[in-house]
Image 1 (tube, rainbow, N blue to C red):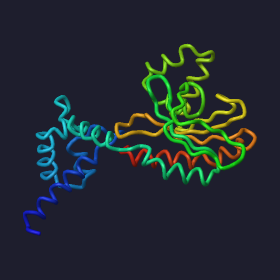
Image 2: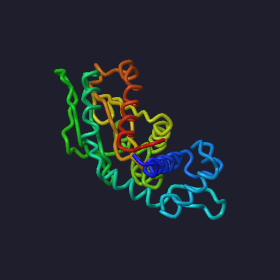
Image 3: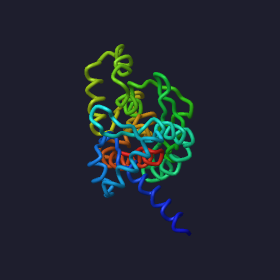
Image 4: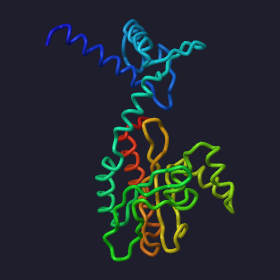
Length: 247
């Protein structure tokens, strides 16, 4: 490889390092912060950032002169997300979770004001909880529904919970879910069925999917649920990362 090619690759790698400095927690950074996080010299950082600004990959805040990801990055993210088959990515994660828990595993997608089951693995046990792919259910009832609802825009949440009988309790439940990304339901949508769920975040940091485990309430008891909460949370986190979420 020629010296020019090596230098070109090095420039690309450094530019990517700068782009990777931006996170959901730190969406806007100063030049000094970019230098520190990327561990690049000031002159290199300034030169690359200027190039990224000129190509629309980074935008400069004209008020404080900080930098943030540009619209072109957002467009690329949307393209990448559209090209990601969530079911294909989720299948091995769900299959392993079903084998380990021996309970039913479901993946839901939010559609308008409902949730739709888009993938399932049914428990191999004789007594089981089963939901068919394509089933549309409410968002405010059940673990997977509330895992989705908790992370939506406040105005959307208000519309959904407006007609419920116990609005204050539901809002409190959603607040707790946002803090832990762990949703639990006992005999909620169906008598005799307990469930746990965690939200799945997409590349934009939005929640469009939820992953859940459910089983009969006489077998999937509180102690069993507690033993699988961390695992489910980790699996939802892995799925989020595999579809592009970066915290």
